[in-house]
Image (cartoon, rainbow, N blue to C red; front, side):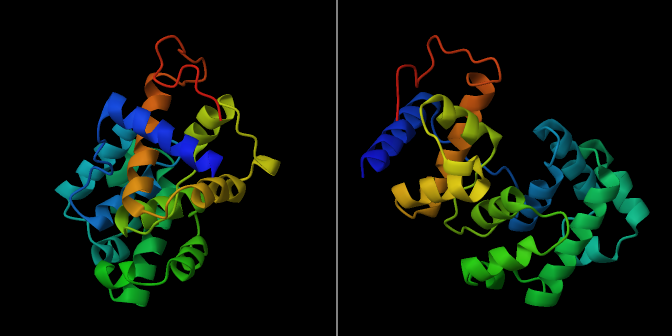
Length: 215
């Protein structure tokens, strides 16, 4: 209960400081899915360039990603790096969406979260952070995304998770916060904003909105 109050306090501080982040920037849920894969091991500027290329080639569609030649797909997503692997991952994800849900993401979003998560994790190249980003931002499922920024910020503010693994961190947040997709969405986006502006590898603590806050 104490952690829950403190986590909500931090959320309110960050929301007051930065305002709503309106993340994930995309025109469709499937575009979010593509972005969640493309953002692996790169920055958002490179992802946005790759997404723009996909839009120019009219490939923001699971059917089109599934049938387009790997060569053409690689050419489009080249700015995101690791393009050979990511092309295979995007095709695997697209084929899953088509075979399991006939390409209907609304139907997919109504499916049980735990089942969806396990099935997505079985797709080559999709780890927990990527899958949870898809669930949260594309399918509006109440799962808390854990990333290096989350570990860094909350580790510096006194949180120690046994083993420091992904599931341990996720369980900590999900067990102490209301199970609310909107809250999880905004909270994670605010964490990313703070990490990029203040809580970098070399932190800029003076004047940080969380200066002096401990958990």
